[in-house]
Amino acid sequence: MARIRDIAKVCKSKNAGPFDLTIDVVFEDDATFARVQATGVLSAALFARLYGVEEQDVLFTPYPAGRAFKATLPRLIPAGDIGDTDVYGAQQHAPLLEVDVPI
Amino acid sequence: MREFRMVSVAGILGYGYPEASLDAALERGIDMIGCDGGSSDPGPYYLGAGKPFVSLRALRRDLRLMLRAAIAAKVPMVLGTAGGAGGEPHLQLVAGMVRDIAREEGLHFTMALIHSEQDKALIARRVREGRTRPLGRAPALDEATVDRAERIVGLCGPEPYMRALDAGAQIVLGGRSSDPAPFAATVMRAQLPPAQGWYAGKMLECGAAPAAPKGPDCLYVTVREDGVICEPMGDRACTPLSVANHSLHENSSPIRHVEPGGVLDTSDCRFEQVSPKATLVTGMRWEPAGTYTVKLEAAERVGHRAITICGTRDPLLIRQLDEVLGIVRALVRSKAADLGIGAEEYRLTIHTYGRDGVMGAREPVQGTNGAHELGFLVDVVAKDPDTAAAVIALARTSMLHADFPGRLCREGNMAFPFSPSDLTAGEVFRFSMNHVVVPDDPYDMFPIEYERV
Image (cartoon, rainbow over all chains, first blue to last red; front, side, top):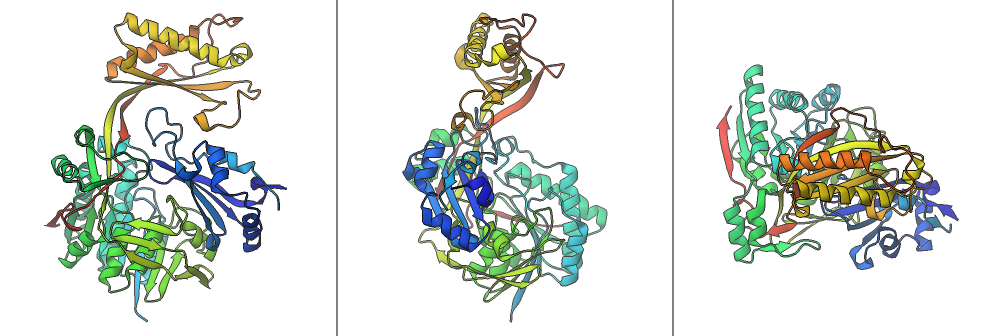
């Protein structure tokens, strides 16, 4: 098993417009990307569980050219609205860091 | 092979860039110079209030170097989403700055202003005509939402930029625009394919973000019939991986990028390092849309904000935090009622740093996890500044003095770092539209004005 924090080159979150959050994980090389992809751990279902949204609200895209996976999901509160904690959405990646991938 | 050489000075005008990098681009030779002027990322305030999110000093510096370069190189200069949010006050702020700089530097040119702020009556008519559509999970647009908006902008496509340049403008300042559109416009005018134009725009709108290591810098892009070459001007490099990964930036999909007149598809892109600092990208595709649509952004006023910041080091308070915050809320409610302020007249939010201040309800770590101290940002939003000030004062004293079971710190629960402890934070807005509108054509929502400077 390996945690994302130990095997990813990049793990980040950011707004995709004011109403959506997008989370990216990038791996160092094609081989690591392929091994992670083969486990099926990174999926719409994983992000739905980590961020408390319905699976159908997660747009999950493997992106081999960038050795990356991307998930886009609704923000809890639109950027900058009352109660929002993260206007840029730049600090919402942490739950993913602890995910174990059986590679 | 035919080439079109482009330079983007920075990710956002006013974020800064090294003058040496711009000089290096000029030395290499350019056919256009551009910059994205804004973003919705800093939040709804700037659109609602009509203000920039960079300092005027930084804006002026970045603009001055760009203008001088454009005039010296005798090439067009395009600036999208001028002034940060691209509303009318933002566009006029930058236009005024351009006129001032031109006077100071003795520069002469024809300037075009492309207006992106929308007439509420026109958008309301489009709602009645059924020519607006929601995006994502947004409900259908209604006239009440249009009416409540403080400001509405449309995201301009490349066509008005092309028209302004065709009409002879050398300097084109646009209001809110699709980020790549001003760049894509210049590529299409050079008779190169739209896929290459949009791809180049996607790279250029963020300055040197497609390069590694990240840093404020100018990006130089060469567009050819077969693809796009990206190269940063400073001490960094565009590698196949750094360029590919830029397709992830601030969008919902790395392979389908929705733009006003179609979709840029990057799923079959290939990346090839062509020099130690440059990468060639090929294989991008442009799929024209059946219907041309313009995305709307709007901000509506929510009220006025006042805040206070404090922290606790009391373990007895920390172990029963939710109960204490509940007592604070009840105290504020009852004291506010004494002042004639109803609970519906304000919103009290207490951010707890050290527990869930960053992720809110999405924080997976439960409780305070052994924290020895916690920080609080107490936030009140009310309909007017007076009400916000009155309620934040009650919230401050309640945070300080609320009694709770087992309390030993009877002189005060909180450490306040500042006097005065209450800060007014001005007007509060919210983003209120996530919709597209079907225009008559790509131009009708974006009138162009020309002037000789």
